[in-house]
Length: 246
Picture 1 (cartoon, rainbow, N blue to C red):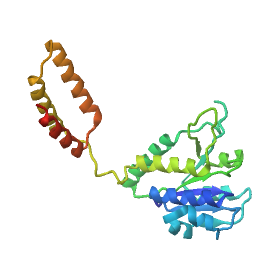
Picture 2 (picture 1 turned 180 degrees about the vertical axis):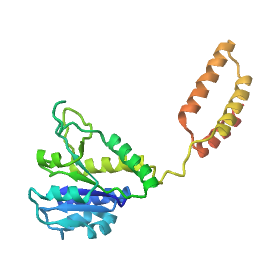
Picture 3 (picture 1 turned 90 degrees about the horizontal axis):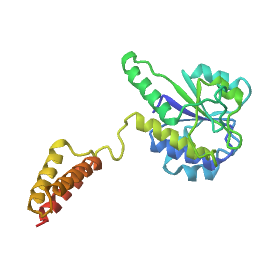
Picture 4 (picture 1 turned 30 degrees about the vertical axis):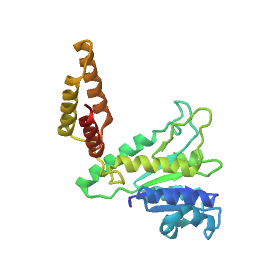
């Protein structure tokens, strides 16, 4: 996803950044920007945690200097700048009234669909705050809007790499990108009809005290088969099993 950049502001932990690289690789993201990183970029922990995503480590963009103008400069580079925060305000606190990762993903997917008609690449930057304190109000103010992962009220703050993974997954999922289970599709109405037909034949041979009880079984099984969204392999295994019932 070459139009989306993950931007870490003053990251302190090499392991977290490495884990983010790994998650980016999982979900087809390529662009990582570090602003004034607080760890040694030659750290073995960074590469060890990145695992097979060291090509992303090699291509990290570094912005060494961080001051009040840094985020303002990013505003000029990206069409949309999105802040992330775990600290929420009340309804009247506009800065900290966020959307969810799922809502963000849907909006980005909509941008992708519109891009197909106007051929313009929309660049998006997602700001990730410091491990200890997150983003401050001034940084959030420079963003177009903010995103929060709905977590438990008992412990709302997530590890930075875990939070980024959830964001990336939601965006990846909403884009409908081909993934490792894309080839496993649920059965069509034809296969469902075959299963129900075999089931009907078996029900006719079984003894029930009343027709109402037979009809209840018929309804229950139809509902279960419908809700299961069976794969073809599962469907044919079930048909084979039903045929063996005497």
